[in-house]
Amino acid sequence: MSDNGHSATDIITYIGVPLAVLGVLPIMYNTFVTLVNASKIKRMLRHSRLTALTRSDVVNRVIEIELPRYAVTPWDRFQHRQEYWQVARNPSSIPGGSWTTFNWKTNAIGFKTQRVEYADQLRQPQVEVNFDELVSYLLDLGAVPDAHGWRLLRSTGLWTPVGCTLMKSPDEHSSALTLAPLDDSDGNLSLSVTWQPGWTSRNFADLPPYWVSLPAPPPPDYKDREEAHAPDSSGEPSSSSSHPPTAVGPDTKIEDKEKGVPRESLDSALREGRTTATTPITCQISVDGIITALTEEKRRAGGVARNNTMGAASTMSGTTRVGGGNSFPLTSTINLDSLYIEHIRVRSGVTDGVWFASAATAYGTTSQTILWNYRIPEDVLAFARRETVPCGVLVLLGAANEDETPEWATPHPHDHMHSIDLFTQRNQERRAAMQAEIRLPPNQRDAAQRERMQRENMQRISDMRAQSQLAQERLEQREMQALNSAKWDTCLVAEHTLRWLRVNKKVDETLELKLVAGHILHRMVRDGHYAAQLCRMLDRWKTWSDLGGMKKSDLQVLRDQMETFSYATLLMALIKDTSTAHDGTLSVDLQECMRMWRKVRLG
Image (cartoon, rainbow, N blue to C red):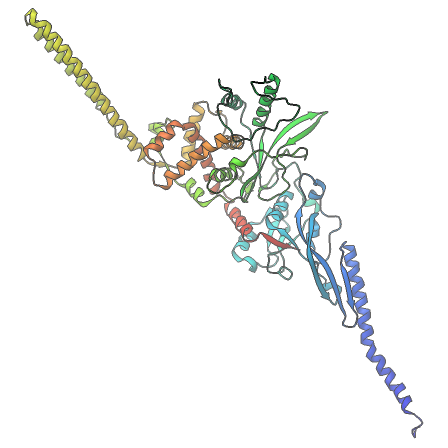
């Protein structure tokens, strides 16, 4: 015992225990705070319906959360209509989870582990999504692209300020798609999305983005098509088509001619072809050209229309922004099957797919619709803008009147007078010879008459040869002058060739240029032979344009295929109009951004 009556044990008890308690207090505090924050985090995860693995380190006050990372894509527009058009019922409120505003088809691609101290530090992992599918989905719901935002994104890339708006709500008062911080993007473009249920201004009856509707030709065209494909005397079709043989079911009983073909079976096949020709076609145009073509056969049974469409379109890559809602008949997924489009696909070494995709993109581009996913090649745009067709050639082809063109041919006003002078001279020579014959004795007169008639025949033949040679020289001169005449703009050429088509009853007089171009594209989908012929004409036209001018062989081709050339001019006029469209800059910006970022992070 010490002098004051306190032992060492008492001192340890009175001083050491409080010190020990004070040392444990931080651990107890860390434990309490960690448990509270872990409870908040679990509650947040449960409220957001997220499945996560959580671990708590109460000593170091660290909470470890392991959340799955997803790759997402929109649901199929046709087969999952409810999920596609409606927003999610329980979107996540956790930062980084703005993507849960919509219903997505998800695929787990890994896990992301976070270590946090407080609940407000929790971040939901961003998802990976194809940029074109994301923008296509928002366009389909009714979002409006912001031209300034896309231009800024294209020019500054990842340095674009956070919060920059790329897509706006349909009323353009709120932001729908904006730039997000790069914290969780791993060097990818980071975006966040906002959407209210009342913003959805379109539905399944509207034309989807990246789709274009091609109108069917008027009824007279069907008769011509039947005659063109009618069997000849050998029993073979008179023109070829790139469509594959039609699949014949067990109930159709279509047989060979030698085996006895039931007449009703042939009539049914003919009616089926007519149905395809009279039904509008919708085409999906992606960055790689056409990928799907659908046609609709409306059958009403009990007052309900059944859509038997051709071509399932489960992916939405490539598109048109539709403002105002074009009617789109694809409202069912029953018996979907594609039209045959191999002859107009983009392939290396063949330009048919490029011509079709370019013309279809031009046809689908209006002031309200931006079919921006397919980029028309620069050489095609340059060709469309160039003045390539001499005005004199159109006069020779009968598409233009000479008084409508600048003076290009050498006039020959004295040709008629020369013919009259020659006729007068020959008559005078004949009259003089006959008077001389009268003064001859009878026995010499007969010989002189025979000699005169022989001489006149030789002169007549010589004059005819000279006249024919002169006409040929003048014709060749006129052709050469026509080939070297002033070249006309593509749209002006199309204006005259459209008039030629109307005069020759090839198209209806009431149809405008764009509608006729739509009929041409419609037939290109259905008729591979027609598409190949038209594309060869476009190739030849572009070739002489690139080489500096038309040759006589090109002129002869146009004479032989004037109708095909006229249709080609309508498509090129359409492309030229599109190249100078008001929204062309926005279209280019969208295309460039899609090219630079195939996949983005959304959260």
